[in-house]
Length: 547
Image (cartoon, rainbow, N blue to C red):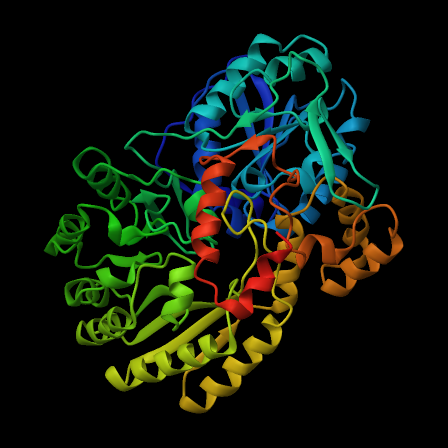
């Protein structure tokens, strides 16, 4: 079974032959193979390691693995989804490695991690890692391996102190967190010695060659797909959006220098192409890219595009997608209320949304999926009415187009202007209201679980004290009830669920990630927060009174 899975892979890179003294490394994805191999980030990091002759890398998933070294020096995890922490702890135990970094000795590998979850806020998971890589892997990964090579034979503490000098490498054990009270806010976060940087800066790759698949396989969750990253970050900067703020600045892949060569290479091994990015259609040469993919030589190519900017949905885009076996398009609208869109900096009006639907239908698409959100700071009941009215108007303007509204609850994210604001306690009722209003109109309403949003907010704004909670919930299960049970058991040892999830935090308090610098300084985030709250009406002003 295992060998047949790896045998089905078609590689788009040439692995190096490892040296006799290559660093024995395990690179893990804490989920099943079909999920992990579909992660572009995981593919690229694995290929980067495999192309180094000084590294011997073996892959590990929750269901299968390649032959593993008996005594690995490095064990890495790519973390794309918060709840995968359970699988990280399980995999560590299966390899007989203590789950807490503090209990590891020189016989254990250095456990490192990276990926979007850890770059955003690593603190709830900090006690499980020796090393965390913050930011883009393009330069960071090679710098990490080079720095490790230089201290490979030193004792563990010397290794960690040397690695801490590399920009973007965060060693949690070298920072001390002090709290006002056991169950209160953070008082300070300080390095344990003056040789350790007080602030770790997230690393940003600024080149114009972005990521592309390094492997194509029928065993992936997206079968036989070849993925190309067209843009990184998003120029829109919606104030709640981690994908925009954390990955700034907006970068685009060079059309002639990178995108077209990558696509040409990928289409030699498959006919399924995925264009990735937070706002793919905002690539300045997107039309030229579309024209290239429209060539008759690519007539059998199946094309998938990640979420697109609403006002870039042209009839030509819809026709190209329909011709390339795509029936559906996804756009993020957040709300039907223009006031809410002003609050979140969503530069969009209802006419543009309706026109996108009309163009999608005219171009031959049969489905349009919209993403919405409830509980956005400053939201009032009339804003929900506006969303219902907008959906009704879209249905009227594009009859026969199947409409889906996927809807989540606002969750505060680190490094964004809304990081200080809590989850709205009315959000679940608001999801139910939309369901009741839209279902009878033949609109497919798909709410994201409110309970999952609560867990997400907990991990999004969590600090190191959560590590003991995460160890407990692993045994209880991953429902919200399990987390509440764990909080009950740990009462008096950490703040309440309410503190992490629903409370509006003071803009003066030390945040769990205050020592980890994202792309924008706190002063800029505060200015963006003030711009948002100036749009709140009087009934919402009390929301900010606590901030």
